[in-house]
Length: 296
Length: 198
Image (cartoon, rainbow over all chains, first blue to last red; front, side, top):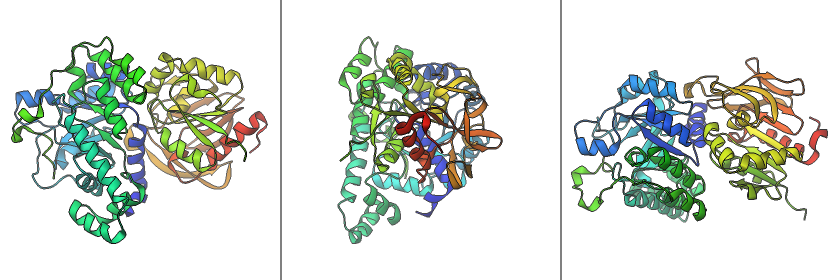
């Protein structure tokens, strides 16, 4: 697509490239950000409450307070990301004015628009968006997302949805590489995604932006699992700071993400860990409790 | 057929895949380096972009720092981009952090500012007649360089591509452009060592 040659687009995707092979951790204050950086996180995500607490406490979840984000930015030298509600372009404008390094238009917060996402090409700050399947991923990229993360089910401590979403996207991409040009028009219609992007994926066998994994990663082995399935980096939300030993667990997940193909290192990282977050059985959740169905 | 030259790419975190693609395109064999044993048979090493704080953890805790120091002592060639430049510097500022010190440079991290200051520019470079495309992403700035350091390109009054013996340092990302000039020069450096001319 024409925007893929723009310099603004290239530096956005460029930052996403730099985050590969690492762990991006949710933090709610400067102290947690410091712990994350010291554990080897390649970026932190500032938010008001971690997904597990949003789920428990309910209410409207919004962009974090600028003061907290500022404190986090002043505390760590790694990139700082922050979340906005789906479609809330004014929150995104505020975060750009604050000069955060990346914006996550996230289903974890309460959506502000029930039909539209932010038109991300209008921004100079790069965006990451969640996706459950290829069509959703390509619609977000068409709107200007410079990074895709599978949604998983945030705050659940359960990896099953992250696995489902990563497998779905990877297998849909694999299928596209086997299709004829005339069939791709049909695929574009079925996926609800622009033909140009569908053709790009068919030719290259991957997304035009880095593809990360999120939503339910709680252990080093969880990180190794999604990396082996094709994730290029992992986001850990509640998994670190809802465990009994945040600093040690954070370090262990960082280690397992780099050495995802080396079970001995993943074993080493898994030893001497305290309790992981408790976690939820997704099948016991009501449809309306799911965060992953937010986003259009 | 001549055996392919093996180029190690530090793959603990960062854009190592982008470097590997360029190396493969130039006919050398990229080897992803995550543990010291991966360095076997490697003739030159690339330290990619990424987060230097994260990469430093792995270097210090998993024996890679020692292994890279031994490689340097044997006269091995290095090429660092962005975070790699920070790791190779003698001194790091903003904030201060440990480094390998293979290049006589003082480097300030994130010195242009945050992501909003990331940019693409074309500028003169001694490696080619036409301007070189340079992608800067949360880039560091080389604040001082020793007398043994040769400046190959400058931007806004600061060196952005330098060479000291077998060590090549870029504060930008040649691996994110279609131009392979800088990587080709590194392969020459690996082959010819200190005698490499421009």
